Length: 352
Image 1 (spheres, one colour):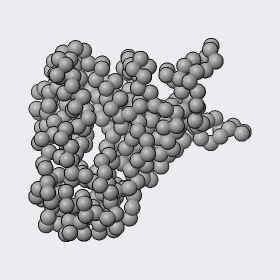
Image 2: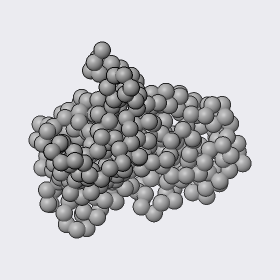
Image 3: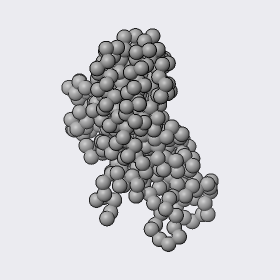
């Protein structure tokens, strides 16, 4: 059976393995080398590393393209934005990840890129902003508002206008959404999150099925040096092996948590797109939200998401968060603990 005929859950386990031969290890090895004997394909470890290659093969198989691992999710974002020509317009969700918006703002101040902020759920407005742009940057679901874009329609409009599309697929993962199949040019991941899944590594990835994009992004990584360490690549690959079961468990709990929060009188709004593991909910004020995150006992007050443990935070505690995000919005990353315990903890915190 080839990878092409396997389910994504199986690909996550089987791809990127050494040959199935006698005395070969089951797992890709951590290649700790800065240089390689000349005359082969590797030469120098800033260009390529066998541990990265195993991870990149797995992510590429999952997304349906060729992957490049980066030192962080933001390094991956930066590499894609570096491809935008000077003065180019980038259509981007108003509520995208604050790191992506912050980098775009730096480019705007420098006069290099003109960001065009759109509400992704207003598809007509997104489509209207595309002609003349240099790049459409989509995030779906958005972080932390959890808005869902009509990706197929947006990509179709971009293709008609000759504008490339990059999609941040961190929240959905390739097990729930494969933007390259919708016609996107590039997919970006913060592999720090659900891919690695254990809150112990920082890494990013870019995937494309376009040879020109791949060549430019590989060159960007090599020259900028935004490369991952081999040990970190090993950790992400190990985490990927259990992505399907972690995602299944956490997603089921997230759905139950969203229903429980909907029923609580202190919660004014629950944002959950019906899939993935992040639930955002709103209480009446920043002060009430701060009291909730201080009162949890099982969950942990921490930033980031996608780990096996449940974490939460009031997003507007970050000065860089979009001012259109409500002060009382709490972003909850649901882990793999038992659903009853997660719900009980949140309800006691809301009542405290």
